Image (tube, rainbow, N blue to C red; front, side, top):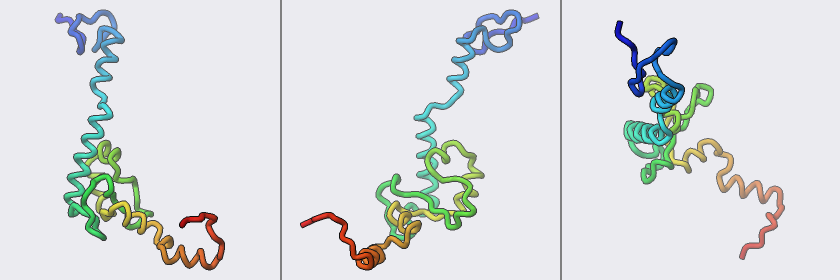
Length: 142
């Protein structure tokens, strides 16, 4: 009968050992199989770049396209949102789930995204509110 060997170091296994000869080899195997933060980050950024290109490569409202960090997906119906399409989700979710979520979104830059979520904070509305309350901010700016 052929003896089994450790999956990490190749040492002969004894007794009840089935895959590893020691806790050290088991931990080494576990650590090697788990992905590092940097590899998750790289995969997430690569997927984001691919999806940004699929969505036209720029903000769907104003055309901004200079910095990928300033581009994000806006869910058209928040009730249908399952998860955010951020770098972490893009690195850890399967492609089918990502594609399904992407169909619920449009690509926006940070400014357009903020305007989409807070349309009531446009400058004219805020200025009207300030005049209505007639309270000064307390700031003395010259």
